[in-house]
Length: 420
Image 1 (cartoon, rainbow, N blue to C red):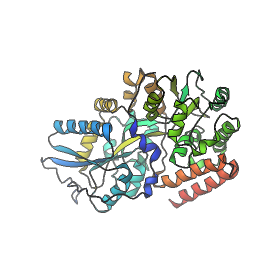
Image 2: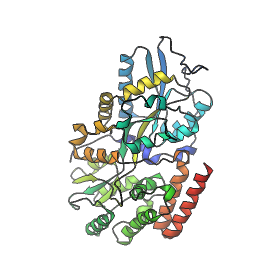
Image 3: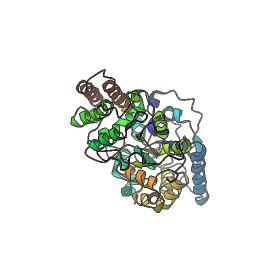
Image 4: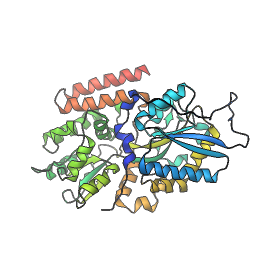
């Protein structure tokens, strides 16, 4: 099994969105950037424009970003990018506070599923005038483009990606299941007294949502059509896996990390996770034979995408900010960046690079990402997230029937949509 390391920045995907109401620290950032009343940039007269870029990267991810910012600064005399670290748990609040006070940075790197939320909050500019002229926009998969738009306008662009996938023990499961029927059969066959055939998180948090929601997406449905044949089938599948004895009833209490450890310690033959689990499995079980596969599907092959995106704020030196983004997302720079950062790209041509195709794990994840979708929940992410994991918990604990749980979930989703 080839080694793929250092996938820590997926925190965006599984821990976020409770942050919509989290308390941020005092905002001590001060930006010199801004636009004149007539819409022109303040620093348009040949002087060096100093732009501030907020991010939450730590350790290796921060080091690599710093290297590329320094490289841009060395190559561009008229623009200088300064990085400001803002802790992940404080980014949302600090950005909104800075925006309301007219002290926002020029650019911000945030979670790929947060762009629509920030756009709806008024913190970001509509970047469509730039993206319309950008020659590489169509190389970004459609599902990833969608989560950067509001009403057809772009409020950010992705800089790196990842996605939910399925791990399987190749000594137990020779061929990964592709459909739900195959999943039930393979899980039942793999189940022993000491090993569950299948493991996933049904935790009452974003982690449960991220684990089950891809199954709903494969039916062609979303949160806004959850009370449907697809929603019923997706809940019935997990219920059947538990009733078959192929999945533990304890999934309602298991975090994603718990599931990963179950797989690494051979307490599960198949599990739901992602590339961020690879270094954990390699460290905990170096002799384990495993591989990655797509989420078994109902109607269509898809999953949930995660990662990070970059956006321009309302207080920015806009043209200079776009100059950096255009450079950062030029194919060669982008390829070098994601490889150095040990992450996954956002452009189809880069996905096809031998680095991402010759290693089997990277190849599988790259293929999954290109057909994946985001939540598209915007500022209502916290509410929708609660609907999904509460519905899942109620059904799997027997607190509600599938029919009643779906009707209640649809009622809540409709109320949110009607209020928009």
